[in-house]
Image (cartoon, rainbow, N blue to C red; front, side, top):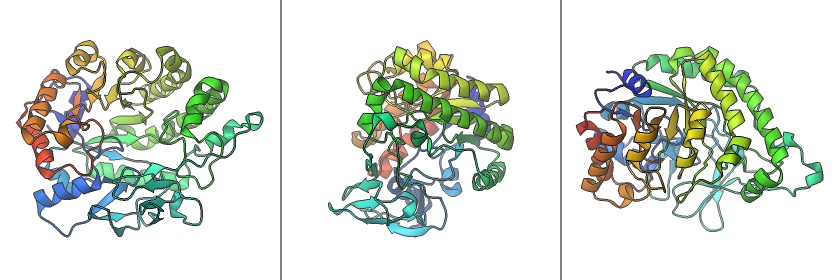
Amino acid sequence: MTGRDRLAASLDHRSTDRVAVDFGASFVTGMHVSAVTRLRRHLLGDTGFRVKVNEPYQMLGEIDDQLRAALPIDVIGIPGRKSIFGTESRDWKPFTLFDGTECLVPGQFNVTRAPDAGWHMYPEGDTSVRPSGHMPAGGYFFDSIIRQPPIDDDRLDPADNLEEFAPLDDADLEFYRAQRRWLDEHGDLGALLVIPGAAFGDIALVPAPFLKNPRGIRDIEEWYVSTVARQDFVLEVFDRQCAIAERNLLTLIGLFGDSVQVALLTGTDFGTQRGPFISRGAYRTLYQPFHRRLNDLIHRHSSWKTFIHSCGDVYPLLPDFIASGFDILNPVQCSAAEMDPARLKSEFGRDITFWGGGVDTQHTLPFGTPDEIYRECRERIDIFAAGGGFVFNAIHNVQGPTSVEKMLAMFRAIRDSAGG
């Protein structure tokens, strides 16, 4: 089977020759550039090769064609034109991380030294405005800097929280046409498209590190308070955002057609380690109407399967995700309460594809032995891949310090498995 065949069968809950695998197709299924660099040098031996940072917020590394061919990876992905810092993936230049990793970063990736000897990052690389990101000294990725203007409830305008949402312009369309050509050149691989502007209330996006002077409600705590105290405001933002996303989705469906198999709609987190972040009633009121609108549009006009990313314990919310029309759940955080793999597969395995959950990146991958990693991966594949409906990925992105030996143990388990 080709990677595309393998992904299609997995999404249709059919058995495959081996489990389908994704590393690098999205901003929630990737690997830190330090980890990619070590893995690539071990497998391909090109010590002078600098890996591109294709997602600068989490400092994720590009899985290029040569590395993908050296590993059992079946899926590639199309990101948005701009990153979370408003940078574009072009005009590459050399950069060295705190751990000594030599890589390539976009030309607009401009940092200055922070007071703690870390780095400040700037929206669109404009160092004349306030920084919007901070990486502490010795760190591996950035955090957003909150730049919340004073809030006057009498003057709150939903348009201020909609500044980043707009119809696709000529530059966007040119970018997506080029990406369509790239997909056509890789037709043997599974294909995922990140849908712009479709994540309602994604807390990574609320601070708007891509905007130079964000307006509206941009403080994380204030936003969460607003989902209760200013619910009419939040619903108005979501409704207008959804209308823009619907228009853009129709454009993208017409442009990509069947070259895409999966649409990643949202990275909004609804779970914590100990339980859901919100009640089922709150999800149904605030989010489900808009998730249904987008899922219904996609399923009505395309063959694409839809992907929801939510960390933590979302077991009580899974029936609502399925009722909203989602086909895929990621990252399947099995270490969280109520997220037992066998239980999830037994209760929901016929209705949703599990994308992730292959190895625990909180405990096993960073702290386990290669043998422990191998065993956990084999166990998860045996559970989730039975009868299809599983795409192997770690539980969220593989972190920077992960050793080559541990990553190789994970890929050895994939190779040794027979799928479902």
